[in-house]
Image (cartoon, rainbow, N blue to C red; front, side):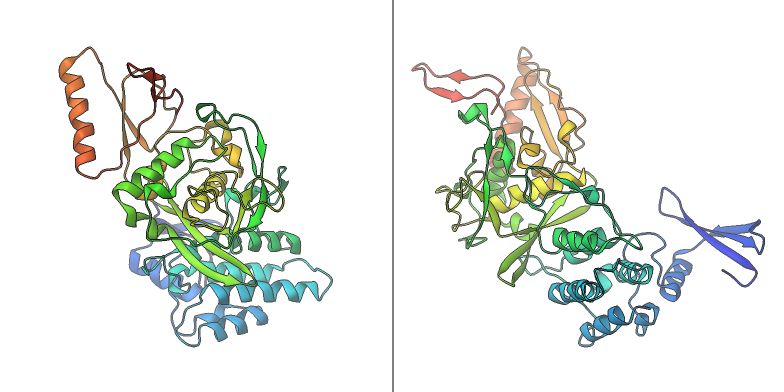
Length: 431
């Protein structure tokens, strides 16, 4: 409402905000686009994230917009020291809300609570604080909190480590308490583990369908940094992912430090944030816990991606990224064709070099020696090479040598099996 009627704010496809002025009878009487200064003032005074960039200022006294007593007092206590909320404080707030509703017969989440949680989300990095493994500021906590309370396409289903998923949904006024609990579990606690089933990889000779069992890992994220030797493909057909990460570990080993946020151990469970970049370079985060699929109950041998020894309690950065990649598939940012949206290990079987772009933010150039369709893949630029054209083939060879020499990640996919003069296999088809 405004002094003379109403004001309606509309965001266009370029992010501009148009203020439409309506009279008391809701008739349009004019309007204009807000300048950046006017937008900042509106967001500060109303506490509303008009342009959806999660950047509403957290100016002194901003908590006056919060109406729920529990949320307001908890937030004010958390930000008293430095104006920020860390992971443990956010989780404490979420658990406090859950316990309050449990004490009142599992009452649904109220409209006031949803509005207050969204008011927190709108402040993004102005309110939430987290750091990556290399101690750089990270937008992890702001990102997953927004997915939890504002909504995400990944909220459609909840897998929870089972082979069959169940419906979930975004948070709305009067959402059941169980919905809020699962959203907290998914985005803050990493409890929405991928379905632990896979079809295997014909190229490795392990094409049988498998179903793993989750077990808690006591492993270490990084041991002496990241190296190609840390990576071992398991009984899941994601050789493309293993190869992409191996190429980064070889050429840019420090790149993985910015991918992880370590939340530490809380109530006996270790969690991490893991980041992937979409084709526009925008960061998307998921949360993973310390549960990893093993070969069976009581086993400590990883069934899918792992370290060279397949040790559940060894170095675990690769199996955690593999697990996070399966979770990120539910965000529909990966070129997975009919498998998109599936939070399952089988959902990430088969692919190309695009995980290099998901980690580094650099688009991949694919040199194809045969006409090949990479599908609708925004992460890859395709260059088909005519092997009968000597100049073209020489330029291709030079590009590959130059990439290796300059420490650029190089990924090779083979669609035929080749052998040397002694019948030793050089390249394996489909690998």
